[in-house]
Length: 101
Length: 382
Image 1 (cartoon, each protein chain N blue to C red):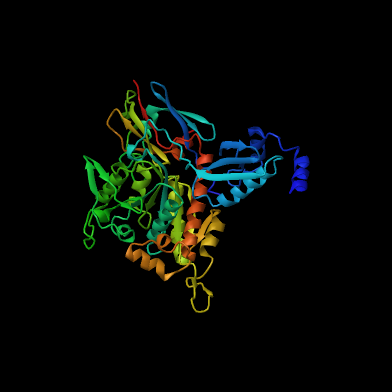
Image 2 (cartoon, rainbow over the protein chains, first blue to last red):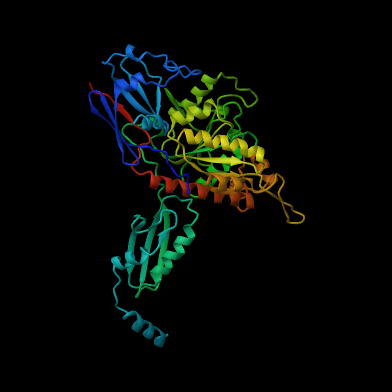
């Protein structure tokens, strides 16, 4: 047998409303994400200090008006969001997204 | 003859008995695919049923031409068909259409890979375990079984594939941002070695090396492939990450030698794939043993059972144990992969079996993953 996958993957990804992203996982669960919240919790090295893991990004600096421009898959394990403020370095692993709920 | 056939006719209900397609399907539904755990009729493998009197011919279309249980399935089909009353001859043709890793086609992030059904990573924790040799021979074994195969040498700093498959030409430019991969025995091959002279070292900073690999994945005209085999550089670094972020790698084959020191690094490679959510198809153990030509005794030069132990403790498949054969190395140096040069040698047979086992794991995975989006892109609407 191939390695059993407790690895959840995406079976559907859609824009639910102007600021909500919906992801359906392989186990059938559907999670919704506030895109502004996603921008505020960006895991990239600019937003989170690589050594101390402290958040450098001040969540209040992210305006409520920020939106994704494009969301795309990264390999088989994550997605990347290009935001309207030009920020696009965050790689949101499926594991991290699952854990947000 | 007369008496015998009339008895047979009575037993089978007379010579004019008409066998229907339904009966044939019903009989074949007794045959199970051992991996997918479903009968071959439900799986949609059965095609072109032709019944002529007491003769029936069917086509069984599998998910990979490299299927290791092909012959077994064929025999089983013939047996159940001949058991149908009124059928004396059964002709079963085995064909294959490679199942593809599911993906969203209209939003392919990397269009160059849109026609590639499966991407196999061949990786190892450390160098010198025979990873490139394994990648080449697996690719040749898959092609030999009738699959369309590509081979990408991702070892930017030590590209050995061109020599192993005897490609001396440099890669051609097909157009702006398009590279045409040269062919080696029908296999599309790309390597950094095709862009430099063999004796020149590739001296590149990490980001540059990564962008070369990215180009290989996004700008090479791969076309329609059943399997793209990627020979990873050893270790768990930048390039490995780049590939996994650029291409939807379907599964990984890990190569190791039997010693514990090699296995330590293999576990690291496996943990990397776990993080990147690339399923590990199994382990290939190289240099497993040497059969002495004088005494026919199996000598386990680098200890024994390492791959097996690893497979057992991590619950993954041991795809094959490849014996040491000096001809494998010679073939690599001379550009004649062992599987092509000595198809009947034990090491070739082991590679062919390993390729079959890997293809089998991929078919299982693709069946399990139906519905999964491998590549996607969502444009946000305001």
